Length: 337
Ligand code: 0CH
Ligand code: SF4
Image (cartoon, rainbow, N blue to C red; front, side, top):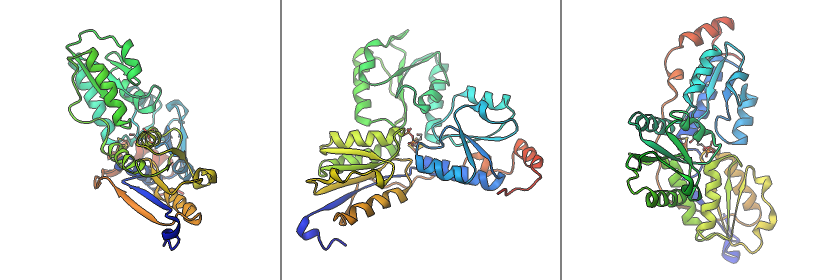
């Protein structure tokens, strides 16, 4: 490795942790398992995770991605994505006589439960998150009449609450930690009685990936983040890298999207990937860099991760009645093509 290194000094800093978090791993395996157990097609409402390659790969195996529950033909199986859904979506599925498999990350479900609890206690809930993002739509749907969205510090001025002594903030799981703290500070200035969530809503994976990219951003002139454009946590990594000091940071889905000119005058390249990104895509980027003289790879390790989630309950227990009925209708064979 890197016989050129001594003369050129070119190197790659590789973030750890990066890539798949426990919630994504579980959700992607869940689709694969569902395809194995019940056969194609398996409908998935919304991209199971926000990654182009993952979606394309699962489509080839027989998954069909839809945006609305109503698009799923009656009597089929529909999976809910890792980002979670509002309760009304469960009702839509029941109305459409669909069997459901819920791949919502348990850490998103945790935030849903917090929302329900504070709504039941009649709090005003200030949900920090990005407008229009699937997760925020799902969480807000738990208690629409109690929840207001706060999309960054600039939104704080317009927020009004019924009783400033009964306000709590919650958040999307994939936000920038630093920007969220700015928003919280602004909210606290306005509402000194504001209560914080019982535990961090921004999840461990989001936090750790930002920590690692922050460390590398201080040293790397260029940071390449592998991830899709609609992936909130991946986009945050680009922002965090720049704030940490890297001259430039880019989001790419594939190595082929990297522009050679980005390397001009660059000695140290940082590489990381979002929580929805398979490692094979990072390997391709490392290969692309290695061919261009950046073959010396150093790990920047910010945290250890060992968390694993068990599969959605619908895939763990024996067939649910509705899924069993569905299989009977398909001719009784478990493993479809
Ligand atoms: O970062 P976002 O939430 O856009 O989603 P992703 O890229 O699919 O990553 C996984 C997070 C899923 C829900 O927390
Ligand atoms: Fe769960 Fe966090 Fe991964 Fe989202 S990013 S799926 S909340 S572990």
